[in-house]
Image (cartoon, rainbow, N blue to C red; front, side, top):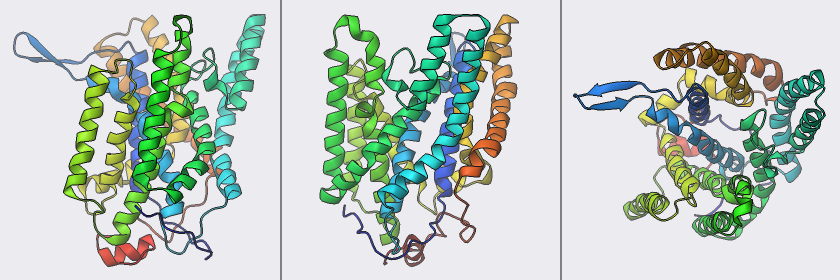
Length: 402
């Protein structure tokens, strides 16, 4: 796949990819519902199937953690999109790229640190706990430097979802390297190389560490070297979608599609039968979600229209804020309900009818106060990501030639 060349022409405003916002909303709902279910006691909703069997309707919530995989794929897609969308727009410079990412990500992130890290520090001071004070100060320092995912004691403490923010930030540092690799080599070759490197790193982390260091595996398996393949898949999906819509046709053959499907099945089989410790489990979900992104980009598809609906796009716009603040609040409120013996179906109702909407509402308030002021102003000249399907018109909007 040829990467479009940069141009010296002045940059133009890009169309907003509403289906991408919709996918962000889906990813956020997956993670939020998973945490509500998990901290609510992993409740069941059994529907009888005959006399001996039941169907647990809550079982899909156990896969909500894979929303993080979707977020990583979307991150790679969105960062690489300005480099491949065409239209005579110049590529952003390294400084522009870094400045935009920091302005978008860091202000609400640091507010989150101040709130939850400040509460942890205040609690330690109130109890006159010297270890607690030291832990809170170290927590704040490591999180401020985006290094907390390198320390097992801090990677999932106080506000656990923040581990992925450190990973994202480190992927941003790796991003220019991947861009340069895609300029020099074919996308398929780069993807295979990243997959081989990531799987090899995970294999070493799982099998080569001594037994006394098994507690370090979580740090290694969620490191930038372990999770870079999902991010690279998002970049590949961006290039694929740009080529698809510039040319007005699917830039692949039936044999290639069958090969991809076979690859997904092979990854799933390897994960279940050979790599019992999850060497390729993250890669498997990354492939599935990259396919979802490409499928959702088809402007005349049902999936595209569903993900471009106003309500799911709106959720996607403030999904980052919900992601930042939700889990400590979910833990506290779920604990409060558990102490009052709210269990089973009652806990399911509490989570789905009260806790989940409350988290969305608080996330929206946080978004308006601390995230929205730092977001780029929306481009009001274009209302949709893609116009009604038409090769000629699509090529015009995507900035290419039919």
